Image 1 (tube, rainbow, N blue to C red):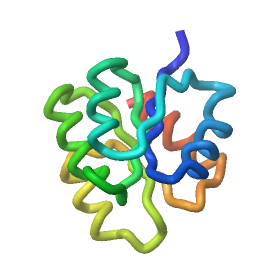
Image 2: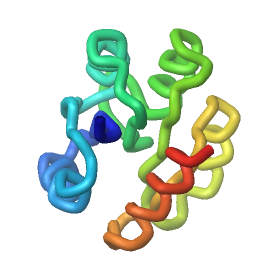
Image 3: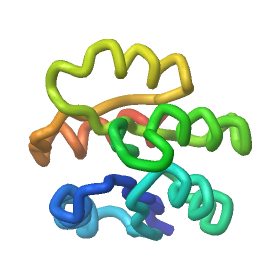
Image 4: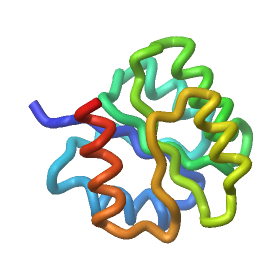
Length: 120
């Protein structure tokens, strides 16, 4: 069975980009546009890995990651951050993020982050 990934980003363009990079080797179990949707979909589908944007409306990626880790301490979350969001990344790690990739996404860095987190 292939690794199931939940993609979380408020940008349709970014979700599509991640889907294109990942769908060849991973099973995309769903997409969410904010952290609240991410938590709901996590509960419903129990993905192997969550690709989580940090800055989103309603519920940001840091709060959503903390909520998912509370539900499932073994959850694996990779944060997607824009260059220059160092302080937010520190908060994300504190919330339980297992890895991160920076935007704009480059396929090799996205694949490496998933491989590293899946192997952990």
